[in-house]
Amino acid sequence: MEPDEGEVSRNEVLSALRSAKCPKPNLSRQELQALTDLKRNSDIMILPANKGRATVILDKVEYEEKVRQMLSDEKTYEKLKRDPTPIYKKKLVAIVKMLRRPFIFWVYSCKIWLLTLIDSPICT
Image (cartoon, rainbow, N blue to C red; front, top):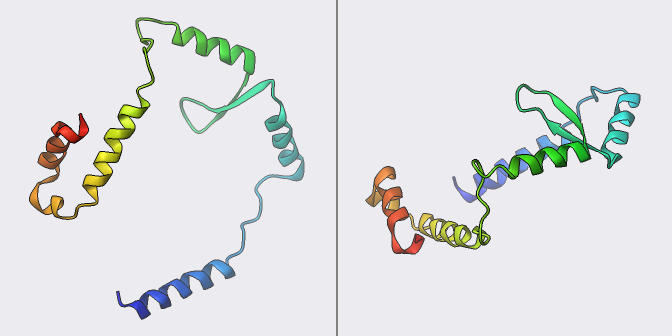
């Protein structure tokens, strides 16, 4: 795409965005007010349901107790001695740096490249 074409495209998109109108709300004022009140209530948790496209409202104390109960199950969860985030962050930064090198995609197929990257000293 030439520089002039890019500018034309940007202007077309900008024009379309400026002329766009917001859709009409699908909730009445009373329903919107009820939702706002629920959001402000610090005694409840509003969460997406595990299945379907439903929303669940739970008592906050009850919810926190269920979470503690689940996390205390030593068969499912293991308490970590330290936070692994810095290690994963270092690996992720290395992967992003490798992805910035365009020649890698030409040298390796995706599977071989990923296996090589994961086993490389940079990521360990």
